[in-house]
Length: 351
Image (cartoon, helix red, strand yellow):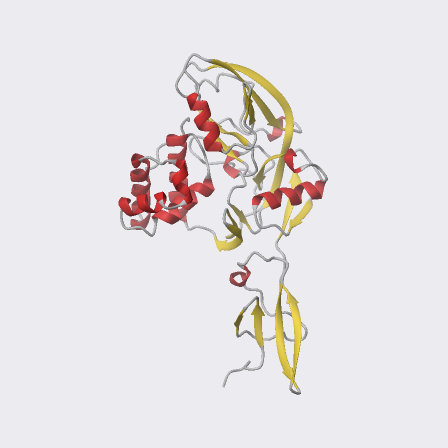
């Protein structure tokens, strides 16, 4: 005989038997029931008493993240978002500045630390630091080599910026250009709204020997203490104080609301990092979300032909990945599946 045959928990159109609230308290919170992205909605209990249906709503707890401006500010509480653009808007509303002021966010550090960028995932106890637009600057450069030595990423809201600079490269020799600088314009070409891959291709298309002017916007700084290193070739990131270390993550998706998921295990994380390094070597971009998409697509395939077919029939087709790139991806994935991942994926190189 079922214990709770007259009471059920419903969320939307589905239903599942659960224990009812006791002594006025809500049923235990289950993250797996929270994957529909409706962070402010509630569950509805139905009880039958004396032949009458009685309904009562139990609110779901909201996800609330702590936030500060990287140059210094009071701590704000941010909630009620399901993608990166909504997150930026919530932050902008909290501190009363335009959303276009936001260059990028780092997690658990106020420094301009590219190894701790907000990308496709937020651990549930991550502390968000928002980096706003600072000084604009124009630099005249001559492209003396095929590669300028940049790795580019973007903030998911129309701003491409410099994530890494290769030691000894053309850009490394120009002290005015720094990690975290947003690439706003090249000569008369406005790059606001361009994805990182488009900016990388544009820079590659500049002929060797050509002189051009690049307009940059640097992050607002409070002082020298929040400036990170120009590069971190070993990918170790910031080893200083950490404000969060959550195991579960809020995963942003391009085709739907954010979902709570378990953080990737060590092998998956290493594979995704290796694929991201491939993106840097082949395309001059850094995109953890894209690397995760590629890994998740590849891990269920049996061979490179299946992977290539899946890429061609998806939104990833527009990136124009080469056969060599997909073969290297497949090598990373098969190593991850067999538990022997290591030494693949190249190094953090230029564009």
